[in-house]
Amino acid sequence: MKVAEALGRALVAEGAGQVFGVVGSGNFHITNALVAAGARFVAARHEGGAATMADAYSRMGGGVGLLSVHQGCGLTNAMTGIAEAAKSRTPLLVLAAEVTNRQSNFWVDQTALAESVGAVSARITSADTAVEQGVAAFRRARDERRTVILNLPLPVQDMEAGHGATSRNPDTHPEASSVIPSDEDVALLVAALRDAERPVFVAGRGSRGPGCREALEALADRTGALVATSAVAKGLFNGNPWSLDVSGGFSSPLAAELIRDADLIVGWGCALNMWTTRHGHLIGEDTRVIQVDLERSAIGAWQDRAEGVIGDVRATATAALEEVTAADGYRRETIRDRIAAEVRWRDVPYDDEGTEDRIDPRTLTIALDDLLPAERIVGVDSGNFMGHPSMFLSVPDEQGFCFTQAFQSIGLGLATTIGAALAQPDRLPVAAVGDGGLLMGVSELETVARLGLPMVVVVYNDEAYGAEVHHFGPHGHELGTVEFPPTDIAAVARGFGFEATTVRVPSDLAPVRAWLDGPRDRPLLIDAKVISQASWWLEEAFAGH
Image 1 (cartoon, one colour):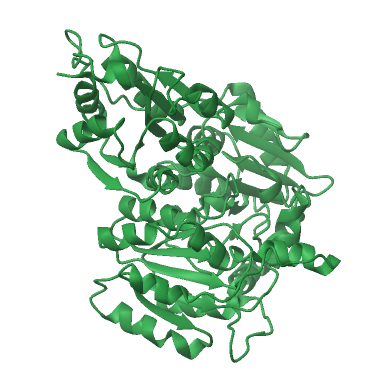
Image 2 (tube, helix red, strand yellow; image 1 turned 90 degrees about the horizontal axis):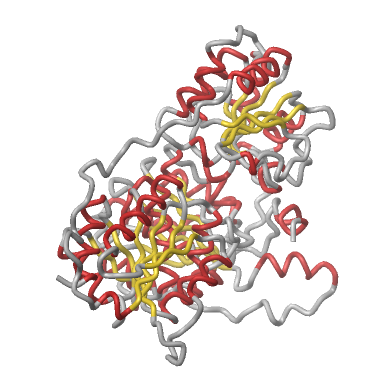
C-alpha cells in the first residue's frame, strides 16, 4: 500500500477518531485513508475554521484532534487556528501536505510557519519510516499536550510503504504518568498553607484533568481556602459554596474584592497571567504567590514573586493534603452568605440601558440563561461583547465552556462551538459571537446546518468592532473604519438553512422558546441588536496591548 494509506491506518489504530479539514489534492489520499480506517471526517468551509474545530474538540474532551490541510495555502489558511491551539497547549496533530520543489507556487517554509507560532514541526522523511514517524508525532501531541504539524511531502506520500510499515508496538496507549512533586516542594506549599489566614486557590487549564477537582476541593476544605478559576477552567467548581467563579477581568466585584484581600494565592496549573490577575492588580502587595505547574519555565513568567512547585495538580494537592492541618482559613459564614448572594454577575444590580430598538446585552444574556437548558456547551468568540456570555451564561462544568482566546482573534467562535459540540454531543451547543466575528467566519454556518447540529448562535450585533469604538471613541478619533451599516444577519442565516429571529426587546425572544420546545431539526440564529456599550473588562484588556 501507499504511504498515505499506511499512515492513515496507523493513526486510527493509535487512537485518532476525529478529523477536521478542507480536502485538496495534497491531502486527499491521507484523509480518505483515515476515513476508510474508521475516523470521522468533518469538512469545514475554510481551513481556519477546521483548525479551530479540531482545537475545541480536543479541549472539550474529544481526544487528540486531527487537522488535514492542503500544501502551502491550505496550511497558511489554517495558521490562526493553529496558533491559538499552540498557545493553549492543545493536543492537536496537523497533517499538512508539503511540496518539495521550491519552484512550486505551493512552496512555503512550513517548518518556519510551525515554529513561528509555537507549534512543533515534524516530517515524514521516507517510506520505510513513515508510520513510525507519524505515530511518534501523534504521541508527542497527546503525551506532551503540544500542537504538532506533521509535514507530508507529496513524493513520499505516493511511495509504496516499506516492509513492516504498518506494524506497531501493541502497547500504544500508555497511561500518562503523574509528575510527582519533590518533598521539598510539598513542604514549601504546606508551610505556606499553614501560615495563611486568607488562602485562595486559582485553578487553570492544568486543573481540568480527571480527579483534579476532587483533590483541590479536599485540600481547600482542609485549609479553608476559597476557590476560583481562570476563564478557560470556568465551571470547574460549580456548586461549591466557596467558589468565586472566574478570577481576572471577568471577576464580579465581590470576587475581585476577596481575591485582592487574600494573603496567599496558589495557582494550580494556571499561568496567573494579566487576564487572570488584572495585570497583577488582584494580587495584594503583601500576598504570597505560589504556582503549581509541570514546567519550571512557567513559574514566575507573569508574576515575578511567584514561588514554584513542580508537579501535576492532582498529585501535588493529594501530597499536600497528607501533611496539612485543618484550619478555617478564609471560610466564615458571612463570606459564604455574601458569595451566595453576590458572586454571580447576574446578581449585581444594573440600570437597563435598552431602548425600543436595541436590547441591553446584560438583559439579553440573563434572559437566555433562563431559557436555555442547563446541559449546554458554550463557545465564545473574542470582542467587546464577550464578557456577557462568558459571565452571564451558566455552564454545567468545565467541559461546558470553550474559550479559544489565547491568540485573542475574532472570528473563531462559531468554529469553536462546532468542535465543542462534536466532543460533547449530549449538550446543547451555544455559540456567542459578535457581528464582526460572525461575518468573518460566516461560511461555517453551512457546516452547522450540514451536520444537523441543534445549535443556538447568539449574535451580539452592535454593527461595529465595538472594542475599538469604545477604546478610541472617547479620545475623539474618527471611527468610520470600525463602524458598519446595518446587516440583516437573520436573513443571511436563513440562506444557510437556519431558523432565525431578530431581537430588539426581551419580548422578541418568544421564538427562542418555541424553537426549544420544538424538534430542533434546524439550528437557530438570534440576531440581537444590542446597544453600543463598553464592557466592564475592556479597559483592562486594552491595557495589555
